[in-house]
Length: 120
Image (cartoon, rainbow, N blue to C red; front, side):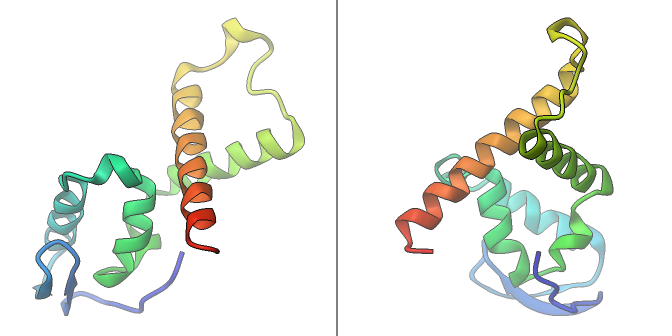
């Protein structure tokens, strides 16, 4: 994730309002994130890709992502890269972890498609 060096308060480009606005509090940042998540085409690009591309315009992305999310992404990577099982058997797999892994897989696939279509 890119680091923008933005420290509240600051003025930055709003990707949803198409103008510079003052970000005075974390609520202002959260409000912008909610506007992104409410965009009509969010499903076309995916939540992850939309946030990845738009967060750097107005905040430090790494500060907006909870530690548990980073931990889950790391667990997903270890599990898929090294074939580490997430449970003793299907009945023992934690459904919340499985849901998280499914979201990560879906978002990863969307990023791959985006990169391929843009020559990256």
